[in-house]
Length: 437
Image (cartoon, rainbow, N blue to C red):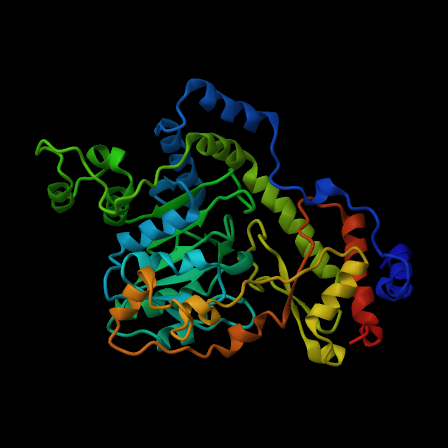
């Protein structure tokens, strides 16, 4: 520990009138995505050419993404939600089915199932990874289960060995939601290339950000063709070979092919152009992010009550470390609520906050007692179930918000500045007993 950081930690807490631990905001450290003239020129070229709604560049982007991810078939979408909807259709999710999904995730991991007439069934989380708990997932499998959606939450890879073993035993398809984990490795394998199919968000806040967009990825040609047929009508004649699909879609019968989903999933080529530029630099950029975030946690490794949210396996990584969080043990701080800890850290300039989503299984829309819950697509999905709808108890998930906190999201390795932030967290942890309750 340097004398500077030691001095920071010994000062009175800022929330009690002491000096802030951090005064230099250093905006470049936290600005994302990194957009250069190369990105701008690529986007401008599409605009000037008037090819925003074409697909030539998007096909190039898909090919390059497949080389990065290690998947044979890749289909660019207008957003990540659309890619997950297409993935669910591709694996056969439909009326009366159930789709198992973690409750601790963004709504797009679950609600597209409703549009297909299926019911989301929520599973509990693993307390360390914050990803779906394979054992609880298996307990929720029924004859109606068509698919399992696993989310590599906040960049942390799921336990894919256990998940795939369970899914294969029961003959169920696995959809990976990689929206938090572009570039994360699970035991040396890229997340998004392990399950049957993957959906990936590439919106402007993600670690791989191209403005707005999504990608569906798979190694199964049949799943790819079903995804094309669902929402990519302009590619049906070139990409679909399945005779049964073609018979429905119309080529060769004098009809213009129509999308089975009645949707248009095509990405805007300005995003594809930016995506190809971003992908050139993404591996080196996330390598620096990993170095920075791991350094931050290494500096706090000996602080009781604070624990890193990162894999312990050396062949697994956090990718771009999207939405970084830490584990918080209130008992180590005399029962101090995490909200009070966050407030004290932010008074020091520490850039903390609530780290995780609101559990989906507690949302009014997903509970039968909520006003209006009997209206819209969700009601139709629930009506297809034979069992009554009940609020499920997920004890680990329900405690996550009380036991996690957000971190400063370092985009560059600047060890002296990172040490100041670590000192701010350490300062608050060491003086937690003084924080007003």
